Amino acid sequence: MRGVRHLLLTVPSFLASFQRSSALMTSASNSITLNDGRKHPLVGYGTYKVGFVPASASSAVSSSAAGDAAKAPEVTAAECVEMALDVGYRFLDCAEFYGNEAEVGKAIAKSGVPRDELFLASKCWTTTIHKGPEAVQAQLEKTLKDLGVDYIDLYCIHWPVPGKHVAAYQQLEKAQAAGLVRSLGVSNYAVEDLEELMESASVVPAINQIEINPFLHRSETIAFCESKGVKLQSYRSLRDGKAFNEPTVVAVAAKHGRTAAQVLGRWCVQHGYIYIPKSVKRERMEENMRVFDFELDADDMAKLDALTTPEALDNFVALYKKCVVRDTPDAGRTELVRTKLTVD
Ligand SMILES: NC(=O)c1ccc[n+]([C@@H]2O[C@H](COP(=O)([O-])OP(=O)(O)OC[C@H]3O[C@@H](n4cnc5c(N)ncnc54)[C@H](OP(=O)(O)O)[C@@H]3O)[C@@H](O)[C@H]2O)c1
Image (cartoon, rainbow, N blue to C red; front, side, top):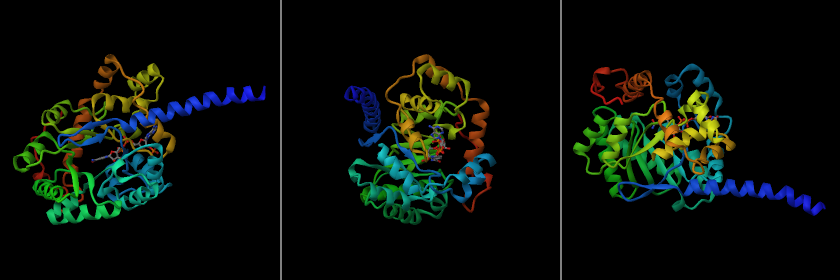
């Protein structure tokens, strides 16, 4: 009798753990092909504000969010990334600006995950782009050293710094030819920035990493990128954790018996956008990854697609104008920032 009870108790927990690990395996093995022929995982782990909050970040967010951010580093970045790798994430989205690449490197070394199973991405910050190509090369080499690797899978220009970003990207083309970088990318590029870049660049970027979620779904920009073979990485896919109570998201989540975070993640990957949720909590890392074992129907997708408001687009423009010169000696010089900008 005792044996039967034991079986009854252990079979469901075995099944739950099997379902959990197969869902995670599915998500880890889902990938897309970039315009340079390389594979890129559809889900990754975002490392911004993981274990460290950059000084200028708290002034770039609302005071309540800044308060949250100040509380965030209770766990070190190395501990968080170790957890993320253990949970099954294999793509790590890093950046010079995040100030934690050496910690990420420690976690990679400790994890024992073979280098060829990882997809590592990083970006150089505005200050470095502003200084010029030599600084970009030096920063790339520092990132490689901090991460403990001899090449990076993807390296991006973080913001299209006016008058500077094209030369920075051309330096990355040289680094790619030298074998330090596999794929080249950009981040926060508007249609006009990509057009300017492609007039001089010889390598079409494989990636444009921009904010994409149902509350900021810039369809014209996305269509332009897709028409040029530039894949979209979606950042702030969870709207920085601030939209989980939005009624449409809540209703779709209830309909599918999923969490709001999983609905936002599923919306993202179902559109074909690369998804890089950030969390410092293990259970959320697991929850966020589980987006390949259910599907949203056309009605759900249409309702979520319709959540972008004119106000959200205005906020995007204000942020773009501030951030393309943020932290550089040109900060605040609005005359340098382009006026013609595809907003949607
Ligand atoms: N290129 C760029 O300019 C740029 C800009 C921003 C971000 N990014 C990249 O994109 C990544 C993701 O964006 P993000 O970090 O800004 O925001 P996000 O992933 O949209 O949201 C992160 C926030 O949501 C919370 N959260 C995560 N999962 C949750 C869940 N299941 N339930 C409840 N709350 C949850 C997190 O809190 P806890 O950590 O406490 O769980 C955190 O406060 C970044 O880490 C970075 O790699 C790039």
